[in-house]
Structure formats: structure tokens, C-alpha cells
Amino acid sequence: MNTIFVKMAAHSLRISADWNTLEGLAAQFLPVLKRKEEDVDIQLTVLPGYGTVFQNFDVQVGKEPNKITFKRADYLIESSPDYTSATIQVHDQLALKHALMNFYSSFIVYHNWGLLIHSSCAIQNGRAHIFAGHSGAGKSTAARLSEPRALLSDEATIVKIAADGMVVFDSPFRSELQSTYQQPAPLAGIQLLHQSERNRLERMGGPDALVALMDKVFYWNDDPAETHRIMGLLRNLVEKVPVYELYFRKDPTFWELIS
Amino acid sequence: MVQFVQKKNVAQIEVENEWIILDTEQYTVTRLNDLGGFCWQKLREAQTVDSLYKAIDLEYGVECEKDAIDHFLADLTKYGLISHAV
Image (tube, rainbow over all chains, first blue to last red; front, side, top):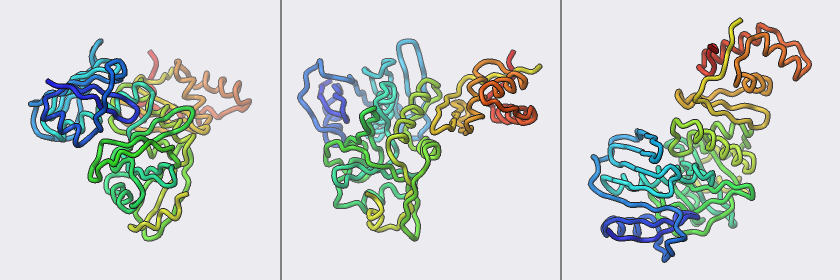
């Protein structure tokens, strides 16, 4: 068992695992940092050899007084109730990626820090623009059509939601386009994608925007306290950041509508 | 008189004078306007049609039709958000 210190958005992680796993993490997810032990926000132990290959997205959540568990066919997370310490058993790299997304989204919601949103995100003039939508709506397409703008995410966007503003961090959770480790950028707006013959942008009201974003948040569970925290974070988001319906053609001209 | 009360396992939030109610067991979303949201808040404790009628009169200074309150409670019951208080 060996250890590396890595950065995930604004948080520092100490990860213990075998060398193969750590090399995979360092190469695919996160830049390696030299940190002191006392700076660490999250301590993780990753163990291989769990379960079977990916079956489906069904996650069973278990709660005990001193432990929260998330169980899927290909991973098992056993976490402290405040998500600062956990053991993650995985079957393979895909399981490790999904388990880390599950764990980190739970951590940031629990600490009322922010949300992991199913979306891509590009930077223009120093400000972040999120593109969200249902599966197949065009998140990856919008990301590709945003070149040469830098991307903060192509699948799962990490948004810090705070009283002094919304900030998007570079996401290590990628689908196709690898991270180029961009600096965080203030969030200018959220676009909900619809493919169309003609480009059009329509501002949404707060309640419509909140309901539309609900199913874009990763990993809801049936805990009313956690659900209430997510709803509160979403309300802060839609009250401070404009949300639009973006009807777009599959070419870069939709950027002309985005300020 | 029949009393109604909110079920557990619901989360709610107010945005721009509208209430969004999420049933965390059935994963349903219900949206209520300002008046519906007022009644919803009252339903944290057991209420009858008459007690809601009086509360609306006190808060808004208007006499709401009892049939409308009855209908509202029937809708919330159908959506699984309230039940008879025991």
C-alpha cells in the first residue's frame, strides 16, 4: 500500500492504494501534489478485486450510526458520516471513476459546498458557461464545438455555490476530452440544450430552472436532509446565475448568443 | 372533521413565490403557487378544511371557497404528499 496527495477542485485528498491504482489515478484523474498531512480534507483507501463488471447505475445506500455505504455491483464505498474518510473497493477503472464521482458529490453536498452537475463547461473571456441536457442532448457536441475555448468539464461539472458567487472548477471526471487543468472560473450562465434548426436563447424563470436542473445533479438519494440541502444549493444557483433554454444548430454559431 | 398532515420524506423549497415539493420516496415533483404554498406550510401540523379556511382568511383577508380547499387537499392526497392525521 502506497500513498499520494492529490487535488480535487478546492479539496485535498490523501489516497492510499497499490501502485497500479495510484498510477492510474495520477494519469487519468488528478495532478499529484506535495501536501502536508494536516492540510488533507479527505482520506481515501482504494482496494481492488471487488464485485463484478458494471451492471447498471443502481446504488444501494446504507446508513449506520458511524458509517454510510454506497453499494453497486462494481464498487463499495464505506464512508464516515461526514465523508472525510472512506474505503472504496472497486472492480476496475470505470468503477473507480464512478465511485469517486459518487463519493465526491456526496462530500460537497454534505458540506453545503456545491454540486456535481451532469454537463459540459467552457470558458469564454474568463467566465464559465455550462451546457446541460438530457442524455444525447448535445453536451459533448457543445464541448467539441466550443474549441478553441478551454474546457472545465465535458461530462460532470464541479460548481462551488457560495454567498459570494458561483465558481466552476476543472473536473477530473471526463468522458472524452482530457483535462488541461484549467484554473477555476466564475459561472456566467447555464444553458439547457436542445438541438434545433435555428439558434435561439430563452431565459428561464427560477422555478422552471430549478426543476429542470434537478435531474442533472449526480447521485440523489432518499435522505430528506440531503435532498433538502441539494434543493437549497439549487435555489442559490438559480437565484444568482441566469439559466437559459438554448436551441442550437450543430455548429459553433450558438456562441454568438452567449455573452 | 377529517384532519390532514404532511407525510414524511418530502423536501420543499420556495423560489420566487412558488413552492417546489419533492417526494423523496416516489421521486415526484409538485409545484404550488403562493396560496398553495401557504396551505402546505400549515399542513406541517394537522389541518381540517375549516382550519385552513380560517387561516387563509386571517392571512389574506379573503374568503376562499371551501370546495376549492377540499379539492386542493384531495389533489395533495392523490399525489401522496399528505395523509389523514391520526
